[in-house]
Image (tube, rainbow, N blue to C red; front, side, top):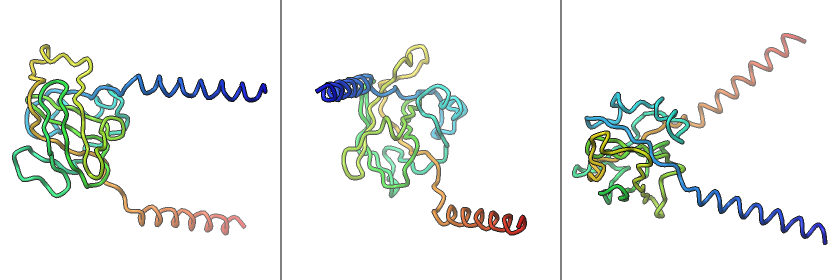
Length: 183
């Protein structure tokens, strides 16, 4: 009887922890200001993004980008632009898994972590919800209600599995050679 009570207590604590985690919500996006059409703007430094947000690993390698109004590339297409501070951007993406999705609008970039802040709509369709957190639009002199001008996927280009297999095999041969030398 005592064991059942303990198990029920543990289940209750786990349920409460799950509710607290869910209720805490996701972290807000990292916002930076800048001009130009490319995310590699000096005001959007990858090291600064890592230090100021929940985005822990960031490589600014462009995987795909769609400028709204232009013909989309094969692997990324913006299907719905956001307007307003709590707008939603919808897009389809079929390329390699990115680390971040970057939305550009009038004078600012918004960086969203792929795992924590990009929501699957099923299949290859995704959405991001604008969340400016403590970013002060007026103080930064940017129009946070501006419509999305482009969306980009950034991340690490994956190393083929053959390279990892070759590397591990090479290390194994080095280990065997060292053992033979010591015997």
